[in-house]
Image (cartoon, rainbow, N blue to C red):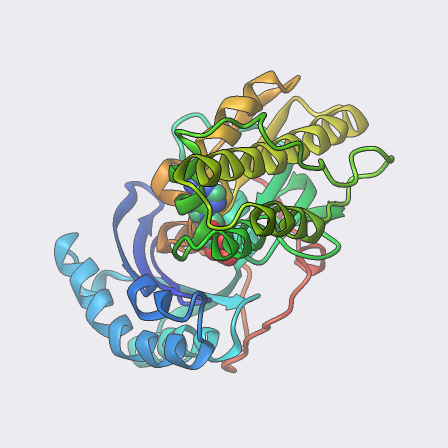
Length: 337
Ligand code: KG4
Ligand code: ZN
């Protein structure tokens, strides 16, 4: 089965083709970073309008680069939530209309399930059950994964998501958007031990997170040192990155001990962070990350997640529906063959 995957939940227009026998046949990503950069964050209406302009040409480009035709596609998977309402509606409308015109099926995909399953696209995927740490711009969650679609939430952020904390802290430091890669770059030459920033909520039991206080601690440190020297900026960036990563690792270790799983998946945009990847080596289990280009939003993970649901025989109604808010543990499990 050849599935065309469409991702438009936020600021990336992404398309991919995934086939049961051949695996990933091709993918294209158009990032809207330049469009939103000057506003320091994503402007929802601009995002929707840009998806409308870019999606159809991107579908054409991905098919031609993969030497495939629309008539080769058996089914369409598109992100139907969670995400920005208008942005989601672009992918859902075009995905469903195209499926209707081609007389093929279409499947709405949960964006965080797609992130979570991205490491399964790899040659040596993790076995079930595993724990997943999902760290993106909108979510920070620890999830117990029994099988595809069978998820229990172990903990989550009570305020800002980890990616959001990177983005907001980058703004405080006068760095660009998205903040994660910018802070990681600035941190390379910094001393992570110079500023003693908190590791929030690690001094009490539980698997929830809170990152908004960390951003405030950085703000105070910056205000005391204005104008910020290049050295101080690098040291603050490194200390912040280290605080976020330590916090994530402490909670992952707790989740592993609690559930006694042998594998941990770390996925979502923040999973691209090199310091996180290095520090994850200390965890008491095997750790799986998606390939670098499959951490941030992409079409491959959507095509793959949709493929798993479609080949399990699941169907959707023909209605164009999106769910800007959608809990992962509300999904239908699919039976593993
Ligand atoms: O998964 P994603 O592409 O989009 C959402 O679903 O939100 O994640 C985007 C987030 C942004 O907040 C971005 O700053 C963060 O991932 N990010 C990083 C890195 N690359 C992207 N955070 C830390 N280090 C990175 N290298
Ligand atoms: Zn995402």
